[in-house]
Image 1 (cartoon, each protein chain N blue to C red):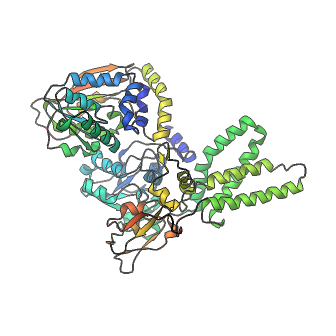
Image 2 (spheres, rainbow over the protein chains, first blue to last red; image 1 turned 45 degrees about the vertical axis):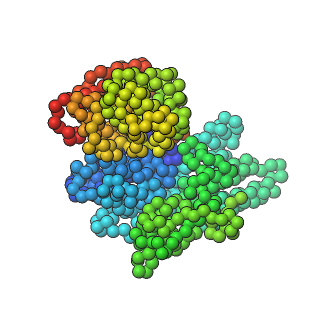
Length: 373
Length: 226
C-alpha cells in the first residue's frame, strides 16, 4: 500500500524527492560473479530498474542521492563520488562478490568521478547504458556499449512521462488558487493549460528556436494571435481571454526551465538568476557555479588536443554526443559544442585535464556561448 | 526534540552552527558535550566520529585528552581547524575531512574512547553498522564508545507525539537541504550486534534523546569488524 502510494507520488510529484532506503538489494538470485549495478535512492527509479531487470541475477547497490533521480542528483551534487564510495564500502558488497567492478549509471557523470571512486575503493567502475531497458542487452553482450546506450533520447513516452510529472504540482497549485479566488475560471484553466502544455511537450522539437524560452515565445505568440482573432469575433470580450492569458503565463514558466524537463535543453532560468546575482535558493546554487557561468558565457568549454590521453571518458559520458573519438581512436574531438547543456560530466571525468571550463575575456564576442536578455 | 532536524540547515553555516544548534536544543546539547568531557579520563586517546566544528573535541582537550576527529563536511573541518588555531589546541586535536566510509584509515591506530554526537541519526543502516564495526576495531580492549543522539521514544504515544512535532521541521529542512535525520530505533541493539556491551543508557527530552555508553569487552581477541 505504502509502496503504491510512493509510486503514485513519484509519478505525479517528480520534481520532489522521494527517498528509498540505501543499501544492497538482490535482483533474482545473484552470486559471487554477478554484476553489481549502482543507482540512486529515488523510489521510482529503483522500481523501474527492478522491473527492467526482471529475470536477471544481479546485485543492485542503492547509493544516497537525497531521494532524487540520478541525473538531477548528480547535477546538484547530491549523488556524488562519496555516495558511491560509501555504498561500496559500507554495504559489504565486497564480501558478496569475487570480482571488483561496479556498473554506474552514465547520467551520474556530472557528480560521480569514476577515477575518484577507483582511487578510494580500488574497485573498477564502468559506465552502463543510459536507459534501464538496455541493461539486459548490455550485460548479455559482455558489457559492450553501443551508441544508443550512450545518449539520451526524448521519445513520446518520455515526453508524456515528464509532462505528467512536471505538470501535476502546478495544476494542483494553480487549481487551488483559481478555486480560491475565481472558481468560474478553474475548468478553463485546467483545460487550456493541459492542451497548451501537451502541445508544448509533444511538439517541442518542431517549435522554432534553440532555447526553451525562445520556443515558449513562439508558442506564446501563436496563443496571442489566437487571442487577437477571438477578440475580433467577440467585440464584447472573448470568452477565451482569461484561458489564453493563463496559458501564455504557464508556457513561459515551463519554457524558462526546461533544464530539468527536456533532456537536450539547458535551463534558461538558472543562468538568468545567476545574472541577477542570486547566489542560491535553498541548497541549489546559481551565481558563480561552473554550470551557470558556462551557460552565461563567462566560461567556455575548451579542449587541448595535445594533453588528451584518449581515456574516452568524455565520449562515453556525454549524453548529448558533444564529443567524438578521432579516427585513430586515440584522442577525442570536440565535435558538436552547440549541443552542450553544461552538465559538466566531461569536465569531471576527463583524466588528463584536456577539457577545461576556462574563464572567458568578457570583452570578446560571445562566440558559441549562449546570449541572454 | 524536533529541533535536531534543523541541524541539516545549521550545518550549511559552520561558523554559527554550535551556537544555533545549542540554542535550538535549549542549551542541552552543549551541556551533554560538557558532561561527556567531564567524565573523560585525562591522557586518554579519543576518536570523534563527525567532529563538526570541534566543540566537543575542544572540551575533551581541555579535560586532558588527545583527540582525533573527522567530518564529511569540508566547511565543518575548516571551522574545526580555525578552532585549533584560535583555541591553541595544537597537536592535541587533529582533524580529517573524511566520511564514515573512510574509517579504515584509522585501522592501524588504537583509541581509548570513541565519541559521536548527533551524527548516527544522519547515517544509513549500512553506514551505522560500518561505523560501529570500525569503532570496535580501533578501540583498545576495555575502551568505550559514547553516542549521544536523537532516538525514537519507547512508548507508542510519545513516539507519535515525537514524530508529529518533528514533521513540520522535517518538511522545511528537507525542502531547504534535501537532507534529513532519522531518530535511532535501536542503537543499543546495534551496539550489541557489533560486539559491544551496553552500559549506561540515559534518556531525556521526552524519551527522544539518549546518551549511550558501551564497552568493548576486555580480552576480546576478535578484532574483525562484524
